[in-house]
Amino acid sequence: MASERLVEDLLALWRLLRRSTHPVRRAEMTPEQYWLLKSLSRRGACSVGELATALGLSGSSVTSACKRLEKAGFVRRVRQGEGGDERVVLVELTARGSEQVAAWQRERRAVLSRMLEPLTPQEQDELQRLIERVLAAAEAAGGWHEGEGDGQGQERPSRGHAPGKPDQDQGPGVPKSEGSGAGPASDAIPAVEGGQAE
Image (cartoon, rainbow, N blue to C red; front, side):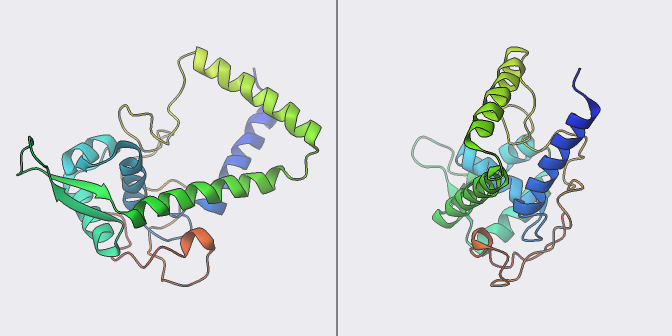
């Protein structure tokens, strides 16, 4: 059984990483808007109904988030092409939306790399070996809900969070004003109207 101190240290590291890199914590957009962009990045174009099911949200909340993200230039709504029901409207990322998701990923990796800098190369190798053992054991046991979406069921964090509500590390969903200097990855995010979560 893992020691209580080890578990608490790992949780503290996770919270620090989220506080440093999470756009909701930095008050750039609402939890709905963030997870909607992440879901579209993984799944490709989806209907509002598909997004609502994947995220565990109401259709009206997803529609509202889509409208605000569309106005900000992160998503667009398109009708199905040939062979599909033209009455069905799909939501997809724009080039700007795709780049924003990629920027979040780059920033998180950069922050984590800086966290590892105090370790020597040998210590980093040992840490990597231990983490790989933990991951292999978890996968052998059937894995776990990672909160980043595994393509099945809800793609929001499952650690006791009610749908549509930020966790304790995310902070309020107040939109960030453009050009306030919160870092490179956030520079591409304009103020997204209607900052409070639905």
